[in-house]
Length: 228
Image (cartoon, rainbow, N blue to C red):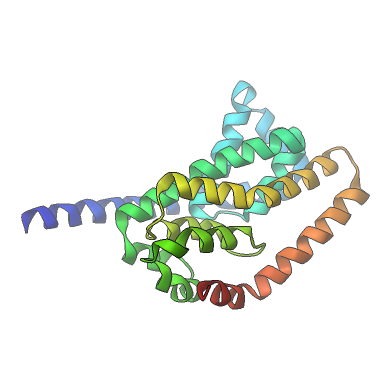
């Protein structure tokens, strides 16, 4: 009994620290970071000011975005392409997303079902909770969900933490499934940086169309996938 009480207190401490951290980061960084990623020129100037640490700073911003949803992930990925080009921008985004997703996954695995129920959008949680304890479907469903444009992928990282999927399998599945969207976003940013605006707009419209369809029908898609 005492051991259970001790673990409960530890979980409560971590939970409180987590939300305090979110509040502090959102309060001090949220609006400024959002404005930076809306203005590529301002973003480039801000990142360069960190000198030799500018790459690490960008990766840190990407990690924070994944964990606490400060700004849409697509904006950060486009910013990566603008700053570093398609190839390196994609690599830096993948590194940040992988680390951020791993942190979210481990937090969810430690704090458990009740915490994730509060973090993940309610309708998505209710649709997907049936496969939490079904090993044969968790990996497949997560791969499909991470592949679909418009689904809340950062929230999915928390949800994955309470499925039977292993840590390394989750990282491989989520990164492989998200790779095309990350590269597309970085490609858009790289073309903006090179002033190839026509090509950037064409790719953005195509990507935006897929994103919009995925976002509008996300709950229907989630429901269909959960029945596979």
